[in-house]
Every structure is written in C-alpha cells, then in structure tokens.
Image 1 (cartoon, rainbow, N blue to C red):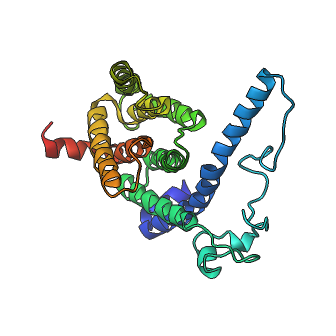
Image 2: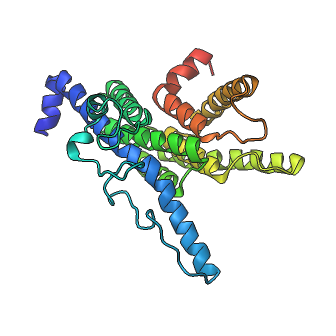
Length: 286
C-alpha cells in the first residue's frame, strides 16, 4: 500500500519503475522467444521416439528450459556473465559483439528490451496506478512473445495462448476490462470465427489457410477485450496483414508459396484494440 501511495504521489517514480521492469522483462522475453520453441520441439521429438519405440537421442538442447542452462554465445559457447546481460547497456558496452569471440550479437535482443519498455510505459500511462496495469502488462508481454515466436517459427505455443485465455476470463470475472458474459462470448466467437474461415478456405481450395494457434490467440484476445471488440481486431489485423504481405511479395521479400504468419498481426491489432478500442468505435461511429 505504501508503494502504491508513493507511485500516486510521485508519478515519475511509477514511470521509472515501469521502464526498469519493462527492460528487465524484455531481457527475459528474449529467453522465452528462443527457448520455448526449442522446448516444444524436444517434447514432440521425445513423444515421436516413444511412440515409434526408437531410442532417445540427446543433443545440447535436450534438457533446456527457461531457467537452465545459463545463456551462452551460440558461436563459441561462452557463458554470458551478469554484467554482460544488463538490458541494452551491455549490448552498447560490448558494441554488439561477444566478449569472447567477437561474433555479432543480434539486434533482436536490445530491440525486444526497448520495445517491451516502451509498450509497458504506454500501458502504465493509459491505465495509471491501478490493478488494470498489472494485468495489461501481462497481456502485453505475452503478445510480444507470441508475435516474435510466430514471426520466427510460425508457431503460437499452447503453453502461452491457453493461460492467456484463462487469465483473461478470470480477470473479467471481476469486470476488470469487460464483463464476464462479454469475455466468454468473446473467447467462443474469437475461436469459431477463424475456425469457420479456416474450414471454408480448406473446402474451396483444399489448402490450410492458417494454423489452429490463430484461433486460440483470437479466442484469448476475445476473453480480454470482450465480444464487442472482435470485429475491430479482425478488421485491423486483416488490413495490416494484407498490406504488409502484398508489399513483401511485390518487392520480392517473400515468396508467394511461403505462408505468412497471421499471429503477429492478430497480436498487434489485439493490443491496439485492447487499449483504444472504445475510442476507435467512437471514431468509426460503430
């Protein structure tokens, strides 16, 4: 309670704390983005080997999880020390290179840290010193992870989308962002809308136009925003996805026969509507 009072009386302290937390969480999200797909691949491989009664084959990533082993340079295996893992500052100090072998470090790492801090600050300013900010930050961080994982691996992990769905329903059981009825119908409609589109596309073309992870993500977004906001999310994500996809194909940045992940556009649109959906509805007069 004293901390909340301090944040309310000294707003700069609240924002500074959010920025610091955002940078720190952004560093952890880099771990999530890299390791969750590896963990899932290990699980699937183990299940396949067990089903086919094949001997288990282990590699350096077999026992990886979000806590262990410690982060290392992918090129030389140098273990990242604490002072080399300070968000953004370490990257600048090391000039974007491994301290041991000099291999270039991807810009993704400081970029995710900075983006997470910025989006966290936007959320904090929007909701203020309230319980809504805590849950909105959780949603924001989850969407950042899902966006990057889907963009890199064309995968929306159930171990992120399912908890996000249930947390959205539980939060709105107390009318934090919308009422429970709207949240439940939002989750159901979010899944069914894209499932119907998927089935219709498959029926007419014989191809799968999207993955089941997209259904689950929109269901989760429906649980957080309510059924009234689903139209905006679908409209914005479809428009942005179409524009970017066509642009990439025209400028030959993407092959026509290579699928474009839809999850990032859903996540971005969902986040925008989550924060400003009511204002957008007023502006569009709907």
